[in-house]
Image (tube, rainbow, N blue to C red):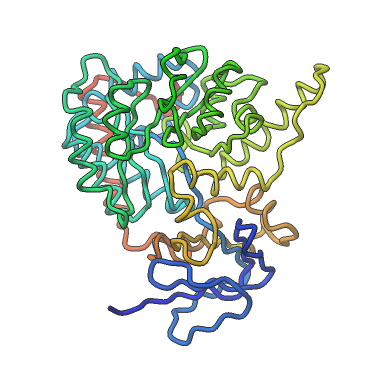
Length: 440
């Protein structure tokens, strides 16, 4: 078997691993799908060399919560602040008309847009798994895109949606997708259905729950030993009472937050879910949540988290509270978009840092743009200045998915035409009308 080597040469190396030093000028050597070495002035005569001068080389970003099936509905509801009005449109009006083809196209669009923005791993929260064929279509799209993904299979939200195939279809999916070497894995979007959780756990699957404190609560059964654990992912976690936070923390669950979406729907308040998670010893990760208002760009979530945490904590301080948590740092924000996301996905031993032996999920970011140079602090530059257009190169498991600012092997014109046809079909089938200049 032929060995393939790639050498990122002469860049600013940001490892996010406390045991692997950052380098002002250094190299990263990739062999096949793994990081082989990180250090100054590495040599590999047979390697394909990528000149990283005027670039930051770092781990790929991780989007820890995204409803990828909404890709075709991009910015359809940019101003909505009513969760139930949102559900009425995306589920009752449009979602129930999804064909497997629409699932495939939306998921593929979101995956490619994510790769373009430096996202190498995504937790796909699919609450429109209408049939095994719909699920297969989404998984095929993920696999073909080349992104690393954890696809969470969940019941569709519209009233009367078919769900007889769940949770039994999980066994078939696990057998097909959940091998140790598969980039795409399957989990359960199980909400609080403990019967479904039991099925998923027998298959060693992770379990996702969207959790807003004043819309749901954990009954006494969730306090029983073993009901909650490190295989649980709780998203949003806004306005959650302290006794529930203690329950989540004691069980070591994973928490993900979506700063822009949580603000859009008014889920959060000055208690601030991210901070509550940190205060309880958890390591919250960042998700984008939805395309109906935003898009596949984790930089926007980093900007929002930095500003929102500081605003919320300062409000509490000015209100007279004592022992208010310190302002968030740029490093904490970046870890939420990398290391913490890897942990949420159950992949902390494989990705999230530039560590020799880990999977080669690497991005290279240009620093010579007029909005970026000079680089005096690498972490601050990534968190506060970088945008998707600065992402030059994206590698997933040693395979280049974006190079020199362009996605590799993708016909965007054909994809655009397919997406427009899918959108127009859904609008016609549902009778839902949109306006180019009036937002919902």
